[in-house]
Length: 255
Image (cartoon, helix red, strand yellow):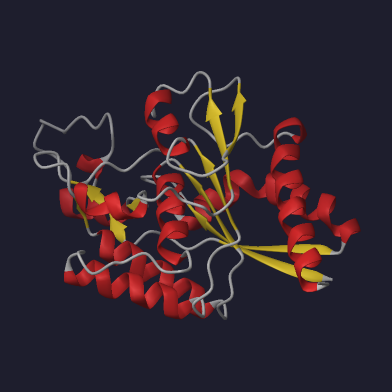
């Protein structure tokens, strides 16, 4: 049985374990559906390295009563991100740390990870990671030193191999100038994009901005909001996509 290893990326304010708990039913359905085809998907769920405070959470209302221990409140909140957006400049702070965390997770998994799946910020990140790993490698010479080193560590961790696919739920195009190199030329890694027609968190134009920067993207629109649909109806496009990638890889190995 061929094992396909997939690295997952949770959304902003989530953690790896929380993302797994929300998508566990989807993981089981994928394994059950692909098992008869001798495909054994293995998913890993690392957590973003940037810990968030309550003030970083959308909709946060500060306690103006003067009571409560804010330091303790920050310690207790289980909320993380892959990067932090600087509201004044639009730059992505701590992105290098996010890439380094993924490199560490891939290394701990033994390398040779086949694909990546992400939601929201994690979906945007999944596409960026796929671009960073594509071969021939994109020229990272113009990146900030810390991000350039992280990209090289990522490539080394996966043995210089690109991802075979990327699955993006409610993802979006990342506009900072320093990331333009990841989209030009367009991302050639096979991608599957899920968009919620009622998503009010990530506007469709932002998701379409990412779709337009991928070669031959597959797009599925579900009649829901900002979440990963886990019912069988919406899992089947994902299962079919993974099977198609696996079949193509098998055909190449038989040539």
